[in-house]
Length: 289
Image 1 (cartoon, helix red, strand yellow):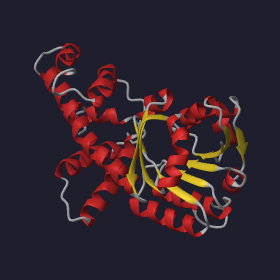
Image 2 (image 1 turned 90 degrees about the vertical axis):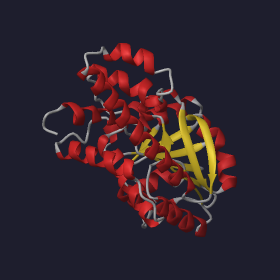
Image 3 (image 1 turned 120 degrees about the vertical axis):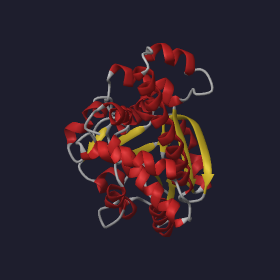
Image 4 (image 1 turned 60 degrees about the vertical axis):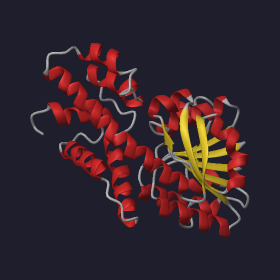
């Protein structure tokens, strides 16, 4: 399939490489051409504009940072919707507002374009390994058509329903993740404070009832002091704020999320927003907090 891909970052770059390895024809857009070098060296073609990246494509995938970035690339005369041909499948894999996903769906449908919202979970390791969980909302026929493309990037791919439902599902994921990662950090802090060896503790609790993806993947990074971003603190804050807004709209309280968001905001205020989410351990260990 001829695919345009916009957003070649920590997640987008390995996702694009997996698509190339699966035999897809990739055109990519980044503001700076050099940032796409890892994928252009493997056969992707860099385009100098969003319009140029999507005009001749069968499908377009976006993996950008914030809702404002999604709006910038999708709308307006130079955006994806205005420059994609009828019948194109457009897939936003950014974690963004469900209401924004609904708007993209409606405007795309009016132009004969099929839209999917398909946020992911699994971090950079899942992106590199092609094992992402992909939560999909939008046009069911488009989902069925696009499934082989999703399968080049992920392993757990589930259609959730109409436009915005993929995004709502991702926020369920983020709610569960927030409390779990905070719990892992507290457990490691407790182990250290009571004279236990944290690595030995993880051997005991990591495969029991406390076991989780966070325990398996982020706890070892915490013990090594490795805070490189598989998923940025600043992006997790963005996700949690959107989840809060959606919960408020539904009349729902989220006390665990609210507490965890407060911790992460303090990290960001301290200039740590570009670290990985596992840097939450610093909230428990650094005296500045």
